[in-house]
Amino acid sequence: MRRTLGLVFHAALGPSDEEQLVERGRWAATLSLLERLSAVGLDALCVVTPDPARCPGAPGEVEFVTSGGSEPFRFGHVFQDLIRRLGPDGVVYFGSGSGCLLPNDGLAQLVDFAHGPAPRALFNNFYSCDFCAIAGAQDLLAVDLPELDNPLGFVLADAGYSCLALPRSAATQFDIDTPTDLLLLERSDHGIPELHEFFRAMDRRHPTLDRALAVFTERSAVACLVGRLSPVTWSHVETQVACRTSALVEGRGMRAGAGRHVPWLRQVVADDGAEAFFDRLARSCDAAWIDSRPLLGAADDIPSPRARFSSDLFRVDQIDDRHWRTFTEAALRAKVPVVLGGHSLVSGGLYLAAEACWKGRNLARRLHPEPFV
Picture 1 (cartoon, rainbow, N blue to C red):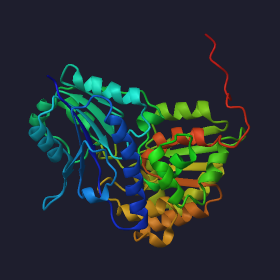
Picture 2 (picture 1 turned 135 degrees about the vertical axis):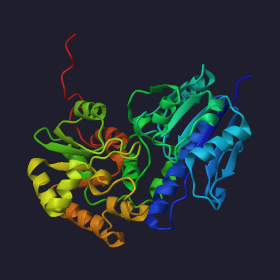
Picture 3 (picture 1 turned 45 degrees about the vertical axis):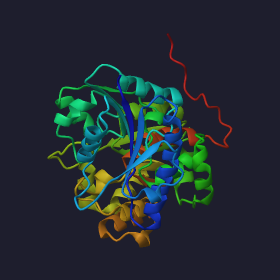
Picture 4 (picture 1 turned 180 degrees about the vertical axis):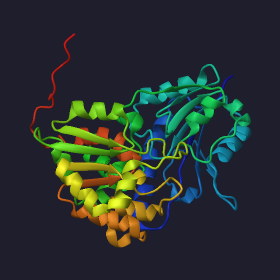
């Protein structure tokens, strides 16, 4: 009889308020996911985390596996160790904070896929994996799996797996990766009971987010989307907002695969300075949504999570990296509202933003003509 394993990797973050905000938010969303995974026909359900004591409230059937130790954490090694020990035929994998918006039938679809013919894999995003279903788990023992989950699609495709991707939507693309993602989730209509108490205790203030959301509802405005933006996401956003949009697409595949090219916008920011960059940006749009990571450094050259998350929240005094602090100060002083985040901001975050912008506003939702067939 085929056995399918549900697997969630929940990383611990540092002690700063900014990091703990993201860690606790991810765990609250993961609790909702675990409750629903418990009802979709998995044979085992595991959470991999450095300290299970920081993960209260999990369903009784969840097994905690302690990661860490003397060796640096490597996603692929831990993944293979669990497959070797538990012997599943299929795996449904989530990084904590991902998949929390999937409906129950979406979770069941992943389990059914993992039960099916092997070797094959189904990704939320083939180019940068947050969650996936894999049929043919035992074959993974012969594959050199990556240190991080992001390039898993490329690795499995090279190993001979048939790789497929789910349609892009808020449910498949949203991932809690930064504080901005949590703020967008709080402002959206996607209710997750386990997050209600968390949101009540969270400081929901942000100096620019609500002004940037309002721009989406203004017919005469322009919003600029910057960073690792998929054309599919951009196309969707354009059908949901009233304003016009422009895009500066840079750095796609930044973590999933190394490249020899330096993103053009990173060179512009380095050569001209952050103040000049935001001055030009303000002359071309009324709000900007910026995935700051490819603009400020390579995948192996970014500061601590505390510095990145503090930048996202415009807590300038908490940023210990001079380059990021200067950029963040310039973004805060920009003449138009700027929202900063990571890849998830211009991925699943934009799906939520295009919904959240309409809360409390009376403009007609149908802003674009239906296609003539």
